[in-house]
Image 1 (cartoon, rainbow, N blue to C red):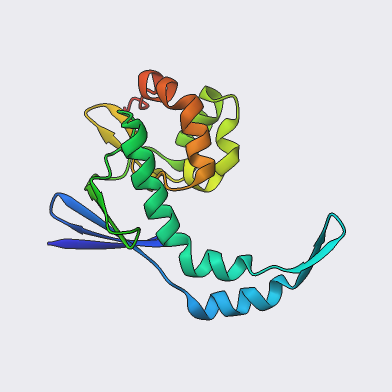
Image 2 (image 1 turned 90 degrees about the vertical axis):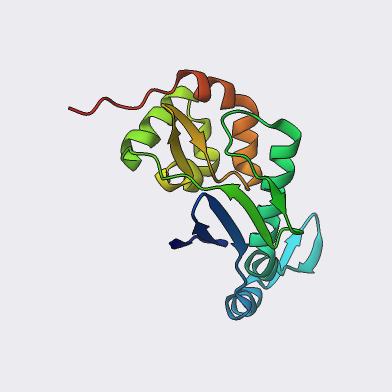
Length: 169
């Protein structure tokens, strides 16, 4: 049995106990965004910015690769391990179920615990599908963003040691 999940930059295929994160490519969106970016000016220089193209074509690969390297470097118990990456095209992690908590409960708790630092990447930290309950501990499954990693470097220890799931009645 398998499940398929679609994120902004990656698709996740879960087969039994393994999750495969495949980078997504959106050439049509990339082309449209590149035209919208246009000419920019900074420090007196004009340049053509194609940030939309890079983001749409390579963001999934970049996220996969950053996630893999970050795990190898830090191996923090708060992170679900990324065991393998094929040049960012596909990552392999153990599969986990999303955290049994509402998005609002998760966001409010993490916001308080980090003194608002989670606002640096609210897309990731507000999404309960990016977290799981692993034997009563909150753990993170999606940490491929540089902004997310900045928050984790400062706050992962506290979140891992102090986070308590709300009691259900």
